[in-house]
Amino acid sequence: MKPISSAFFAHWRYDLPASLVVFLVALPLCLGVALASGAPLFSGLIAGIVGGVVVGALSKSPLSVSGPAAGLTVIVFAAINELPSFEAFLLAVCIGGLLQIALGIARAGVLGDFIPSSVITGMLAAIGLILIMKQVPHAVGYDGNFFGDESFTQYDGENTLSAILHLGSHLLPGACLIALVSMAFMYVWDKKQPKMKSFMRYVPSPLVVVGFGVMANFAMARFKPEWALQKTHLVAVPVADSIQGFFGQFRMPDFTMIANPDIWMIGLTLALVASIESLLSIEAIDKLDPYKRVTPTNRELVAQGIGNMASGMIGGLPVTSVIVRSSANVGSGARSKLSAIMHGLMLLAAVVAIPNLLNFIPLSALAAVLIMVGYKLTKPAIYMAKFRKGWPYFVPFVVTVVAIMLTDLLVGIVIGVVVGTVFVLAQNFRSAILCVSDGNNYLIRFRKDLFFLHKYELKKALSTLPDHSSVLLDMTRINFVDKDNIEIINDFMISAGYRHIAVTVRHNDEINTQSMITEPVREAA
Image 1: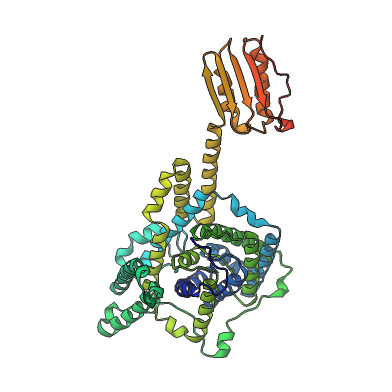
Image 2: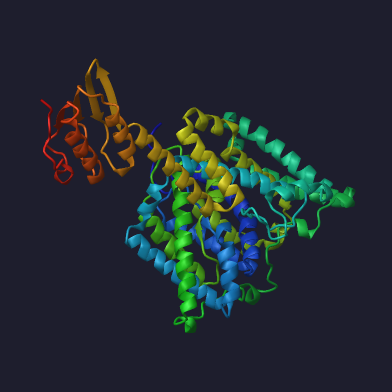
């Protein structure tokens, strides 16, 4: 694969179609997150615009897309209800952004490097499954839950599984028709598009699907009114009746609340959670990048912090790097951050110029787009590939998928990391010591540095040595032995003299002096 150019407009042919797809995906998600957060709908659009333009311009991630995240809705909802005004909450968003900048300067971005790759891939697969399961109700016309929700428990009293089980009483023929035709078209189009020679190869299938959805709904309203979708099943962008009304939707933070400790506590919470979600998303999207570019995570925290300060200053929700938008960006063929910036500009232009036209877009068409995005993230082939890597990789992967689906992103990641760590420790525990014999002569070779976790294995290896034998303890391949294991070795050598076991110890000269055996080496006569 040829190196990719770093020139800003070098890949506009790929970035422009991808930005259109991300725009169509981001529009209802921005509105859905704002609705679930109990915030003005326009604040979600502000966050989407800032995430695209400001964070996109400052970040060095080529493919990540930022905006309001579903993972923050619970925190934001509680904060808005706890604080005396929405303007006070905006101040907390600004403070959170300032703290994120401090985290970036303090090089806290390194935390993302400690997440096992099996957990990161599990997170992507889980997001794919959640997208499919959460969007199926919207695809068939059941819009009881907000668009873009990712949590297992829903605001409408259902959960991810029960909502699907209860679809039978909520099916709308018009929505089902639009969704099924849209998914079938995208599946065929994505197969044939790479082979096309004309300009059609650059036309994104979601754009065609959205156009079809709008025209299909108009046709149903004209020829089969009972199938036509009503406003509750369409996009709902706030429409101002005048220029003054449009600018009146922007808010500013209430700086008179700066001394309120609750503001600072909420700001700290937003900074930590938003930073963790951004680092996880960056790690995941870098894995999806076909060019395998690596994003500077400290720079990303600074960019996210500046984005949150900008969003809070003009009335927007907090922003993070978002996996759904970012994966749609990757899947649509984007090659540089120009795509993220252009999607933000498209959001701005659409909200200013054509909000009424956007409100004709059926949610079932957008749900079909997200279902196809989810399918690409969680194909059966992905699970088979992880299974072939072995249980130590496959089990943390599956646990992460299940945990995220049944809880939320951060809790699922923590569970996945714990399980992954157990497998890493188990692998390290089992393979640190090699014991072989030739007649009455034994070799015990230490293949890894010995820590307290290896006490059982070391005791077991030494206990197998018979009386009247000879043993070589080969420590030439390691540089450290902790004090617990030193004590075990010393006790063994003391007892060896009484059991007529000849002990020889070999080690390299670079072994940690604090870990050297302190008791004299005893060799039986």
